[in-house]
Length: 305
Image (cartoon, rainbow, N blue to C red; front, side):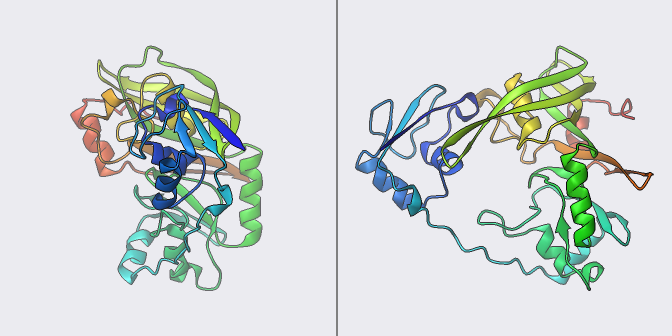
């Protein structure tokens, strides 16, 4: 059995072993090395090393590879200190009987996993706020993205938010600092984004409404309202038009990768929704690393509403 893949633009110049983990499965390095060595994985019909940098439109052939030999790492629950719990409690914007809203820090995951140990669910499970219940994650926010994030305190509220998100009745606003000067000051992006699920290519439609808050010859500050909620949607769409976000190590050209900021300059700024005819609007203050780059790039945020 042969499975063949064509490298898309977002994976240009990526190491082969990283591509395999991202697109095929979380295989241990030893298994990847073994199958490359015996020729069960080839690039353009040639044997290569795991460190080989793949290029757009390269053909990757996988011969008789045992996809079921994926060794799943055991998820270990994060046991946060009282200091960590308190620090995250201090980030709360609103705390009511049904849910909390906080200004999530960059670099912390929402839920634990094989790649992420420190996470909000385990942290707030130890908080007095959830003493007689448990935190429910009701939406996604990437580990490296800061800003507004919500957790429900009970199952009915979690189900309600899940329904609101599915019906696109929750409106989110993001801010990003990206490379280069955008040619249009406002508009919408309509794309067909590609992702892979266990080797299967999936194409998803993505729509975002955007507005430039400020720009100059080398940087732009953008406000974005995603209509759809695809994985890495905003990062992919900006990369597709040649204006990747500062600090984005995954979706960035080699040119923009030079002098890359440590933090991803993507912030979940605002979230709005209605429950029982009551309007809720929450805004998250900009993190220091975001404000610092705005100053360095001489971008003005005063036009933001």
